[in-house]
Image (cartoon, rainbow, N blue to C red):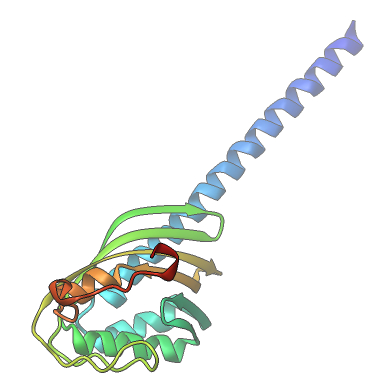
Length: 190
């Protein structure tokens, strides 16, 4: 009988230990996910929504890895230096640029954000060879719905996959006139 009591006490102690360990792991994981989401909130606010270029670039040094990679509709871009060039060009073209986070989900080292970018084009947009010509300043306000998947490493943004509604942006900026467009009918449909 005494032996049964000892076995029972050991089973109870193990159950309590496992439960406490599981609870600790959950708290730690939740904490990590919240930290990653906070880093993304800082990037949207302190870099992309900051009218002070020097402060935005300083924040980029803190929040991006040196070997950061972005994947978007224009292809892949590598390195923090290229990202800082993108930040400077964006602030030059859109001095009032803002990114408003609408939704955010985190899992492991990944964070997905759905956000709305807005700004008035007061500067030229540089040409992107094979993608778009230089776009002169036009003073038009644009709203850009965007979705991005981010991968973080050691508290810094290491990689990003980005999707933006470029069609809507081009319509708002007056670069596309849908009334004057014609579409070829594919041969398979004739």
